[in-house]
Length: 354
Image (cartoon, rainbow, N blue to C red; front, side):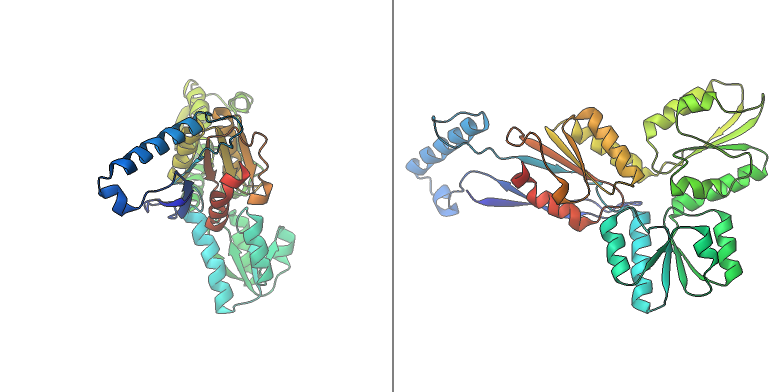
């Protein structure tokens, strides 16, 4: 058997980094071009027999005692890997390292990926996790990650005279402005998302004391809202689009004056839609990303509903298939914080695992 090398490449599009990976797919023996074009009757017969053998192999046929090897189809999501905001944030950290501006800090891990964070730490970048640590700084460069932060963090950095490199995703920045402006105009802001997620905490930090966070339609029903209250609804950029729609539908049935703004990132929506489609058409699905990555967790939930044989891994070493040998097709997607080299490694070796 020889290997045919197939190239899979995404088109560049706004809000998403281009991903280029290579797939290796095993096919039957290739006949030399010269013979194939010569019209040799014997060779044509051999080729026909080879095709029949391949067909039998795919269907589990063949002579008793023979080892049957079926090619596994591997499909990689075009939207897998770094999104625009994450790619931009990571690049800005490496730029500061190259400039030699130190000491360098990030407020929280720059992305939810242990491999990247570990590499940056080895290069001298330190992660600050609390406001107390931040307040104790008197020098250095602090990089604000793509998730963004509330206004209080900017005030602390300005007060201490610390150099700030703001790598907040532009789409998240837009939500900050909306929350601030709508709050000032007298609307109560409701953020649909995970209150423990740093992006949501940052968004809430641009609101006021009346700003609320909900994650489910049930939580909506328990909100302390006043009759006739003016509301503004926004969403965490990585929130599940279908869940957001369900919550919005429930809100729209109330008597409130409501302004709903879909602030879910287009790249997130595209990633979720593509992952769902692939998962519904394969025997096994692999979702790659950090365990603390919100968007990767949501991808896993979506894929799991479509394909029960779904694996959530951070690196290739985490992949331990339970149904190896019975799988004929595998899908691969990855969260916005997953580097291309990890996706490539999984893609190149997935047939060995299954």
